[in-house]
Image (cartoon, rainbow, N blue to C red; front, side):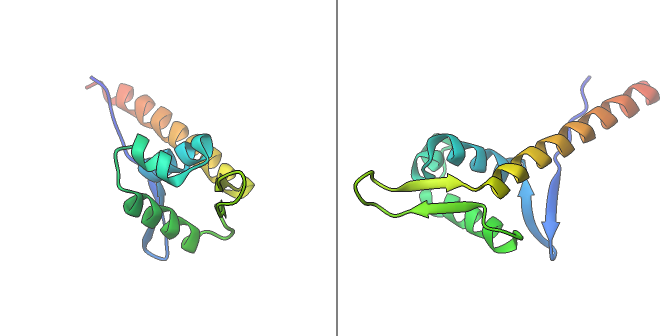
Amino acid sequence: MEIKSRLWVEEQGKPFIGYGRIKLLKTVARTRSISAAAKELNMSYKKAWNLLNQINKLAKEPVLIKNIGGKNGGGTEVTPYGKGLISKFEQLNTTCIHFLEKEFKKIGL
């Protein structure tokens, strides 16, 4: 048996970051494109953009920098703040899983 859990963080009662949004942010960071990230994650560009826009609206600082077209074709960068959110969420999630696994062993299911 394994124990599974999903963790998310809310801001002002609204979803801020969670597993799916972090996965999207990480994919944007790697591909440098919202469109490519959406395609890779099998979601529409509109859905990806809406999720990222919600994160940006609730964040203390911007998580994305969009570079419009031009000679190099534009693209999207995850800001240092956004990369910090990814890192902190992953640390929190790992800590939560380890805690749950430890507690799960204690109760002996």
